[in-house]
Length: 63
Image (tube, rainbow, N blue to C red):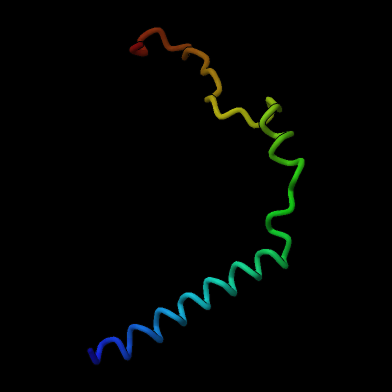
C-alpha cells in the first residue's frame, strides 16, 4: 500500500503533463490545417510510389 503513495502522485503528474502538452498544441494551432490534407491527397506531387528506374547500360548486369 505504500507504493500507492508514490504511484498516485506520479500518475497524476504524468496526466497533467499530457494535458498541458495537449493544451499547448491547441494554442500553438498545431491542428489548424483544414485545406492542407484535402489538397495533398489529390495532388500527384507527393506520390509515394518509387520512381521508375532506367535499366543499366551494362549488358552484363543481372536482371
